[in-house]
Amino acid sequence: MKRDGFTLIELLVTMVIGILILGLVFALVQSTSHVTQQSVSTSAGIEHLQQTSNVVADDVRRAYSLLPPGNAAPVSAAATGAPELAGPDLLALVAPADPGGTCATAFEYVVYYVVPRSSVTGGSVWASLPTDTANNDKRVLMQYRACTPGSAIPTAAPAGGIVRVVADLLGTATFDTCCETAADHARQVTVTLAAAQTIGGNTVTSRTITTVAVSRNVPAK
Image (cartoon, rainbow, N blue to C red; front, top):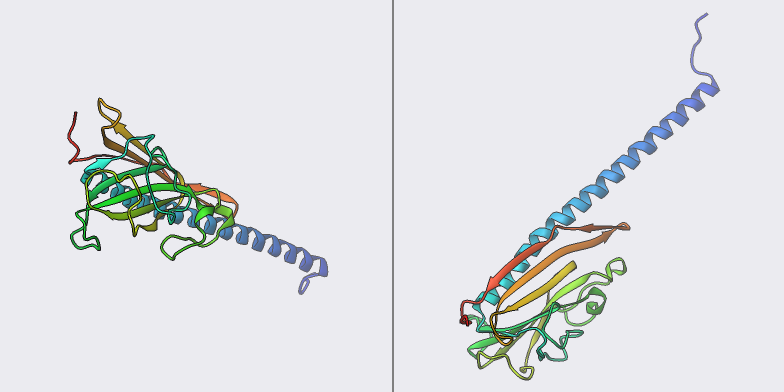
């Protein structure tokens, strides 16, 4: 005998199966969205890292002086948290001033330094970042730039130095300043950068960008 419609039990079973299917679809969409977000973040990070590395390398190639590791690198109080000495977390150099820039002097003193992200959540619009507690442990590449009259590394911080953020959300950021035959003769810098960001409890890390730059203006010994 043919039966019309569904029984209550059949309706309940159908509803349960429907809810399970919707839950699986929602989880799949959420997972796909998360993977896409991670992929976009990593791709954007690599592109930004390459641009950042090129900027630093260009300054090294133009430099007339590179501060060897272990030497004092004077900066103004505006460079919050900057290391006192040149080394893996700090690169200091003097390069020709940009002809179209604001310097009336022939040279610029440029310092790149790395600090924890949590230390740059306050300050000027160019030198601060929005608070992000999930990424407090990540690193930030900062730049201190000031006009200087000579090609030698200054012994004191020049007046009017400007600080700005160069790259945010870094897992790795180091400078290896190399010397030739003498400890006071630095010509080559290896810049190593890798992006890292925590998204939804998961940390996304980009591949590492390594760039080697040699000054054209510091003669070999």
